[in-house]
Image 1 (cartoon, rainbow, N blue to C red):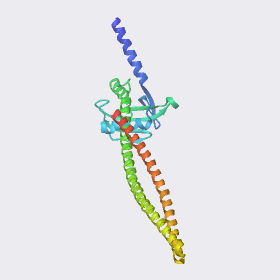
Image 2: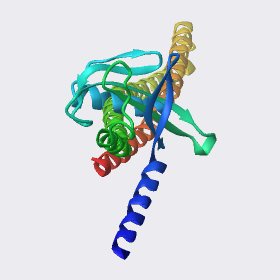
Image 3: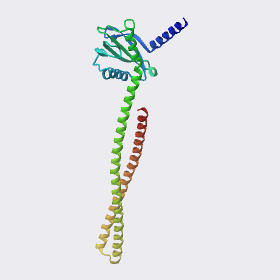
Image 4: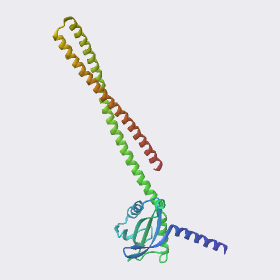
Length: 271
């Protein structure tokens, strides 16, 4: 008697826990009231849960369906998760709760045809299979979310790698310009020094001869030197800007590398 009493308590507790997790419910399909089962999935949007179920039915069970009256509908098809018969399967997902307590409610209706909906009162065995299916849904949703995150990380890493390569190519081009500008500036400095020496020699000549032609040559050489100095100043400004860009791009490249490392670490952790 004591063993029977203990067994009945276990059955009652299991039934109560199951009822809390998966409930038999009545839902509207258009204007028709259908008996089905519902459960709530936390930390997942209706879209995520909906796609998880659609993948389950269409990819795992190879069912062919359509959307009708706000439900995914699969008519007169075998579904081994529920039993050996052919079934009409309906499901939808809706957001319930407020703010931090939001979750997704799944409603699943399984019929043997003509809206003869399965329930515990008319088919306990199939009903238990439906409950088991819905109880496993949370892990299916988590697996789907994981797949989505893996794909997202792979795409992000590929995009970052592409940005890194593009940035490095730009850096090479800027560095080539920097090197060329440095060479031009060195050549320009030599030309300015030569022009300064030329002016000094002309001035010495003019101080001795006071030749008007030499004076004109001094004026011309002075203008050429001034032009060279302006060019040198312009190249210095351009070089400064290029070096600033190199520094900014180096910093940006370091940030991209850091992001790539972070995303790869996350990907490795969840795979």
